[in-house]
Length: 371
Ligand code: FAD
Ligand code: UDP
Image (cartoon, rainbow, N blue to C red; front, top):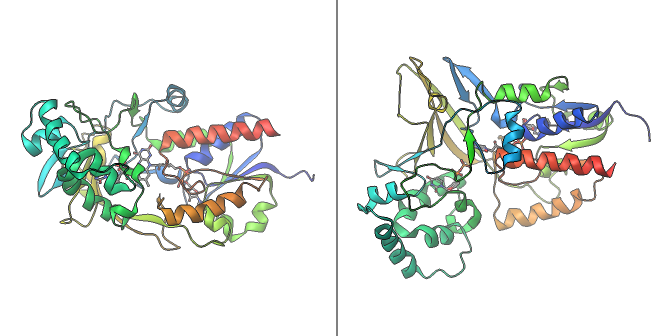
């Protein structure tokens, strides 16, 4: 085989690409990272505005139950003690999330787990859903009608642009349900926001690795393919195959950032807008991730829309139609010895950051072992 300049061309400098490149480089492999954006880091990228770290592509809270992954990411940053406790606004009232004793008290005045369970069980039993087949059935069978109607149905339809009956059940299982007065959005043992921000993590990961920004793989595919023995592809898998089985659907987001001349806008980092009165899904107030004391504040409204070909793809829509198309792409991709597909877009998977790190470490390890 002809000796090429790089062992790996890594398409995408998001968390998957950065972890893969970092570890491959450590293992002595020659890596080139390219990204079509003008910055590295993919969706964990932050901008510094009014002295505040602004999560440019939506709030990113690191959380994991896996000690190895926690130790891994802590090599690159220390984490603060932020605990995500979003609020839900519905019918112009504020409630606690995830669904817990505080929410039940705010809804029904129930004070004990037994009282809350009684109400939920009455609703759930009367629905008689045996084997939840979609998001709506799954939600109803876990939390009953009141919570579904007030907090889930409309938020979900805004976020996904689809009826909740056409969405997979697993999406709603991301949200804990508990019968204690605990507003922590995650059940994981470890969580926080990196002190110094996500950019410094990515910079450390990519330190000493050649990285070319504003470089789109598809703009000069033959050239890029000629540079390396292997490609690590973290872009859209359907685009890699020129959409031959049809496009996969992704939800995109419009982030509307505003700098406000006030210390505190909403008193919390995340407020979800769960009914149809607001067109956006949530408002993020970034300073609260780091307990900021600045005189100004930056807030971001998130508007979700169906990604067309030039929109940024953020969320894979894992409904049955898209999943059967994805399986076709997956089948041909498994016969591609020199391409490693990884990350949210190439694996078409609703991954969080800790899962991305685990996947990148595993895929590199497997690749090194095979060679
Ligand atoms: P990406 O970050 O999407 O990176 C892919 C990179 O590839 C991009 O930089 C892109 O420009 C580049 N690329 C694509 N195509 C090409 C091409 N043709 N040529 C060159 N470059 C290309 N996870 C959590 O754990 N906690 C959270 O709180 C959380 N909140 C989130 C909020 C939002 C709104 C979103 C969208 C995601 C959130 N996530 C969260 C998930 C997290 O962002 C992802 O798990 C992770 O960032 C995915 O990393 P990635 O490298 O797979 O993809
Ligand atoms: N969800 C909801 N109401 C909420 C929060 C979440 O209905 O107040 C549903 C919605 O379908 C969303 C899913 O739960 O897409 C997962 O929520 P999560 O907060 O994990 O979404 P992410 O932060 O990944 O956008």
